[in-house]
Image: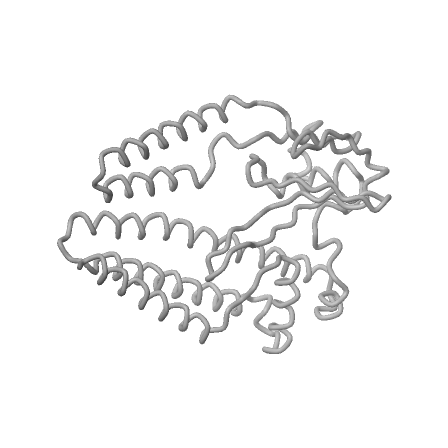
Length: 288
């Protein structure tokens, strides 16, 4: 009840005024500016940065309501959708996250799925919006009077049969969400710090293999952090009593739901070896 008392008469979702990747883009561009020697290229990149900063300020002025959730239903005014859907026509409304990308460097895409009783699905990409998924879930359940605001409310039969516990299925779903979110943050912050540092060191140090070493060390750190995160997931109290086969089956099922592909340790080592060889060759050729 304490949480529900915080819910207002309506939940309004607008575009985010600031995004996580904004600073990273600026820092990476600045690192490239330091690296290149051509004055015209430097000026072009500086103009690009100023244009991007202007775009950020323009985005901050956009105060239009994109999604409204209230006692009447859900109103969507984004992604070329302009529609109000009443609760009596809504079967499920939930946030689903999927991953895109490769080399264990995924980008998480959050989508709001509104499924109607008429088997129509409205989908909105939520990455550029400012909202709290937990509050959105509470508001959907509160205003609809039904438990339809979480994707785990429509968990697959395989997961339900596998765990034989609906509450446990909800908890394991949230644990897997947190795992993907942590890993994405680890990659993003590591990449946006280690790679620019490697580029800057190329300019400062008179050593032709600086970027090859820095890039390889960066990927190796990401690889180690990813293995640690996977071990942390496996040793979570909810999964501790599951045998290896059941745990692997559970992760594979959630992997399908999140469109998340996993690489085996041997594959990671092959990828790492190829990156080391490629960067070393490029550094050697650039030093000639």
